[in-house]
Amino acid sequence: MNINEIRDRIRQEFVGAQEKRVFLVEGSDDVTAWQILLNRFVPDWETHWAIAQAGSKSQLLRLLDLEPHWLGLVDRDEWDQTVIEANTRKRSNLLVLPRFCLENYLIDPGELWPAIPVVQQETITGGQATLETVLHAQLDRYIRHGALWMVVTPLWTGLRALGFKEALASEDSLETAQDDDEVRRILRDWDELLDPERIFADFETQLARTRAAPVSQQYAQWVHGKYFWQQVVSPAMTKLFGQMSEARRRIEILRQIPKPADLQPVFDRLAT
Image (cartoon, rainbow, N blue to C red; front, side):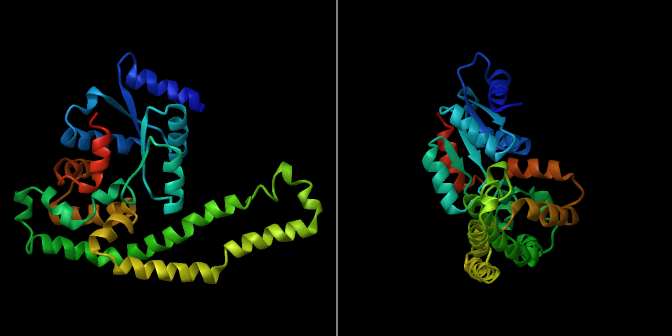
């Protein structure tokens, strides 16, 4: 299905004859989460908006280019600040999540605790401090992973800017392959970008900066929230509070978490 067909399907399935704009998110889990959040914090949002999944970040961007009056929201997981600024400057209808990904709203014990029913809170000796201790015990492992992710991920953008791999391995590179000096130049550019000592030094710098940040910021921006939720938070909550499917627990938390202040700009855009 090409991008025009995806656009037409969204129009037919979610808008039809209604006078509504489309709020695009990346995946089906995002649709469910945002329906819950908007129902809680943006009264009557459905009067003006229909929410639909684009299927991927790249497809969402292409849909926004086709439909400038639609609004789209993407995770910041794969983008550094330079990429974020370039994409939002190009598209006024693009929003970038303030946190690493949507699951980062499900992992901070300070935000999780108020979402737990009081009757369950009362069963835990030590209360919120116990939950914090359990989650904090795993935090540094995921901070290291998050810092490395932030340093390594932009390398792909850099390689593509240098023509990787098409500069040497595509139909158009046939003539380049005849020029030894040009082949060497391209390989040197790639090698310079992928200098292991520089990359590791950047990782150490990022890790030190991340560890120095407030814990709430570490949970918000420097941990891969999807992994931390699946591998740490959901199992810990099952052990502490009893068996519940991951999907169900996610929904119940979203229904109870305090209003995230950093999502207010998104709520404001969807209020009219």
